[in-house]
Image (cartoon, rainbow, N blue to C red; front, side):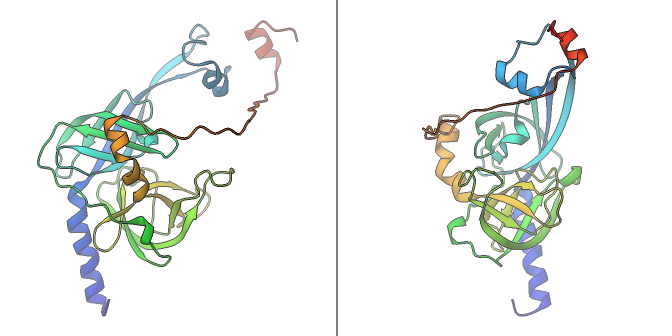
Length: 261
């Protein structure tokens, strides 16, 4: 860009183009908790096994972001935004609110499609994340800490990043220094043409200006599966593994589970 004025106008124009199709998602989920029973036991044995052990139940509120990809109400967000939600409420720019239902979801890629009963909605065009370059300007949209209609700008800091200890597990993420905070999850990361090139997903909580986004091509490659089948079919790994969880057993726990001490 040739001048500060043209640069400023570019960001303003991106906001005008993108903001109408960005949504804010409120969720409510039922959480059962008991300090004597580690969450690992619940995950391992499945739902219902520990229901007789005096669980406490409460409603947990959550918030996130998303963006409309079709005028008939299909919306992209992160899986972790809507995971185990009993209620999903989508808030459009301008104040309209709609109940939403999950159409498809995938935990591995942290992708989800929800739908609202609406028509003729503004929607975003998908870009091509395979052509991204380090140093390229990007703009992030979302709902950080409940602050609606927030826009931040930065560059692509790195490509093919991983948040997993397992090599190759998720080494496809876009790293950006555009500010991403809790509540931004599921919002669009766009280029200066206003096309979506990523889906905001995560941050490093102990660092500044290090955020990560899912490349939009990953969604594009699996969009039909999410909408038509409700899930993505992943290749089953043939690598054997063993999961172990250890915790000290104290006197209270032995009494609770009637174990010898």
